[in-house]
Amino acid sequence: MEENLEAMNKTYRRSLALGMGFLIVAFGMMIVQPLGREPSLILAAVLFVIAFIPLEFARRIARKMAIIALRGE
Image 1 (cartoon, rainbow, N blue to C red):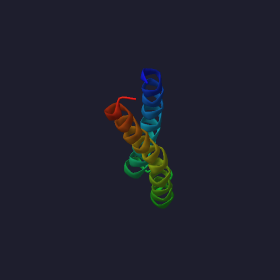
Image 2: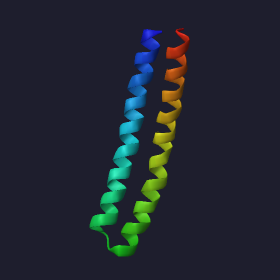
Image 3: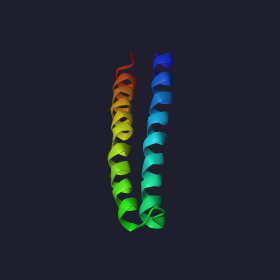
Image 4: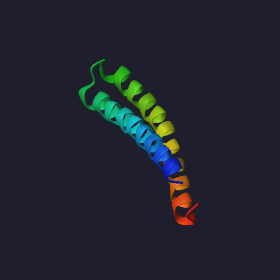
């Protein structure tokens, strides 16, 4: 069980970091607007949508980890 939780924790941290990284880049694009106003906002909106994929994956892993830990398997 410990090895399984450790592997899940590693995957959880990676996917959470990836999702948060996308969110930070999207906010940066909105604030700095390096490509101009409209293209930067469009790209930021796309990055927001993409960021929710790894964040949802991390949420599901966290839920599975909690279930495994509470069961004591």
